[in-house]
Length: 90
Image 1 (tube, rainbow, N blue to C red):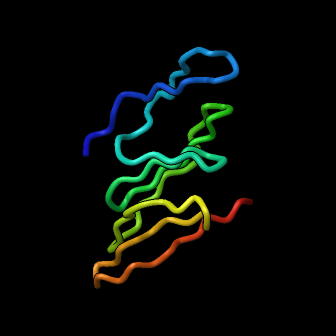
Image 2 (cartoon, rainbow, N blue to C red; image 1 turned 180 degrees about the horizontal axis):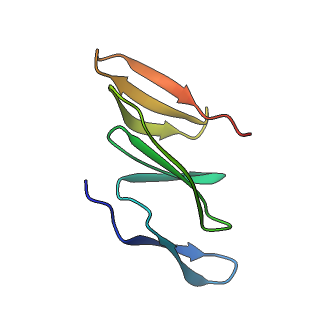
């Protein structure tokens, strides 16, 4: 997938659209931070500050979905195993 030039988020406090420059395409989920994932890549953004925090590439795995209850990514390995990858908040 090709990255989008940005993403628009609706701010419910100000009732206005906010721009998030450079947020890549793919699936997005908000769970304290905005996670964007596509294929082997995951990006993390702080929506409050509009700050890009980190992007990483997980070799040999594909992020399939995010589980809001367990706060974990559902990941498919190249061997066909389904695993959960948890995010630790520093």
